[in-house]
Amino acid sequence: MNKFVERKNIDIYLPVLRNTVEKEKITVIPELNNINIYEIKGIIEEKINLINKENGEYNNSININLFDGFYSLENSEKIEVLKTIKELKEKEEQKALETKVKDFEIKVNLQYPFEEIYELYKKDKKNNIKKGELYNFIKMISEFKVDSIILDIYSTIGYINRVNGLNYDYDDIKNVVKEIRKIRLFKKSEVIISTYIGLLESEINEDKENIQKIASLNIKTIVLSPVIILKGTEISKKFIKEEYKYLSNNELKTHITNIAVMLNEIGVKTYINHDLSRYNDDDYIAGPYVKNINRIVQTEVWYEKLLHMIKDLNVRVKKIEVIVKEKEIPKIIGEEKENIKRLKELYDIYLEFKKFENLVGWDRFITKLKMKRNKCDISIRILEKYEDKYKDGK
Image 1 (cartoon, rainbow, N blue to C red):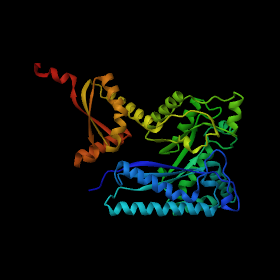
Image 2 (image 1 turned 90 degrees about the horizontal axis):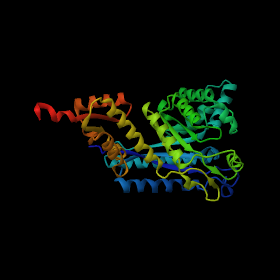
Image 3 (image 1 turned 30 degrees about the vertical axis):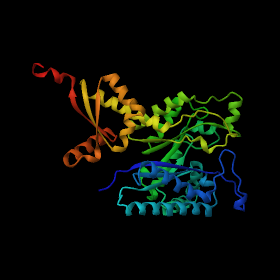
Image 4 (image 1 turned 60 degrees about the vertical axis):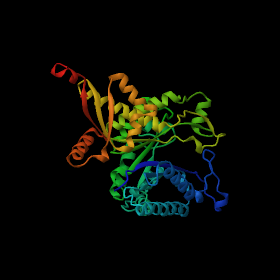
């Protein structure tokens, strides 16, 4: 019998490197810590072992997210990084198979600045080459078992990009995404877009518009990166001149939660890239930081989803059965049963949980259809209504 697996994230922040001849003399732009690219394998193996130790061996599938500086490496170094991760991926998946865990997998997601990909796209269009530099790049990373490319954009809104020193807009992003999909080396769901929250000149409404435009490209996962202020950046100069105000911790939590709830309603997953540990203390000036923000936001998304589903029942219920994948149960319950308490307080309702993995036959099929309709891996059943106790004169 297959063990059920949950997906965990391992975020690797590669340094942004300036080109030099000797690897020993590579210099790192101050915003990022100097991570030795030749120690990546050890870092990932250590994190995989930690996940297995905490959750039981191979009870978690894993995303390896390569953020930041891959684009700045020399081609030979890019190949070395991808080769190392490919070998590690194959080794870990083989070990899982040997222990008869068929559902275990490692997905590799590679972040790349949109403007770099856009330049490849423009060169190919200018020279009227169908299988040019963009095709070759996508083919190369696909051969090394990269599952998804994360296009790192500032915004889909042209004037916000121009204020932040970039010259592209929604149509440019749309064309590049379309071109990558035409190459047919990635599925539609495997083009991920990362974008920023709290950019210069981007208010809450602009952030929301930006996210909606990204989702309209049939993107299934969006990575959100809150803006922080680092020494030597353009935004730090604006901050010093009091021309830029960053979001407070509470504003960030509320803002990202609202975005995540909105995306969840249309079936788009959210991941928040908000790890400040990769920055040197001397380089960090200011900006919001919410510890465990992914967990906090996921819990709130589930609460809102359950709230709407209970409202849609249009009847006062005393007890419901929540059918959901096992991995989601702790997120729905919340820290210290926070969501259970909130729903009990609001509706005087009790929740019982049933694992989707335990369903069989027709029951499983019908539940799966309901989940598809809800655009979420959850279904609920009424177990007891409040009026039931008054039937038959009782």
